[in-house]
Image (cartoon, rainbow, N blue to C red):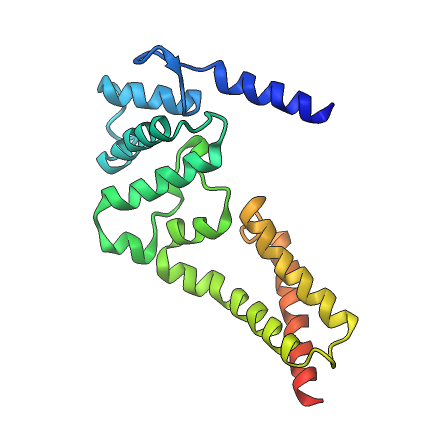
Length: 202
């Protein structure tokens, strides 16, 4: 029953937005289609978006139509827009330090946190913010496999919890960017480091 209701909702959402320029079902959200039409008609406020951002909306529109993306698949649209934005900016500085939050509009704010680290904070921000947590978990997995006969249930549960954080951050979002969640992540990683040190001392 729930699957049937989801399919009805999915089909309804995907078919109720028409693209006036083609008179066909839109492959981007209604508000993004409105922005695209303003860009085409040159009615977009000059201070609202720069030229690279405007071109990225156009690129998103073209790619979404080419790939027949559903207009309610916001995460795919977010990803396409941010990739196009990096390409259109043609500036290596943005690769290093990222675009920040001001480059995202409405539903274009990335909800998948791992790509968001790269696009919002750049390579430098990704290395400083995300990689330390990743290194701790990978090292914990390495030590766990290396000393598999010595690990206890507590070590295993802490490690699984730490890995699950990355899964959640990719699919759910707002994991590493939430202060309450970050406190738990830091505690988990601290416990994991302590367990690794205990394991190495045995």
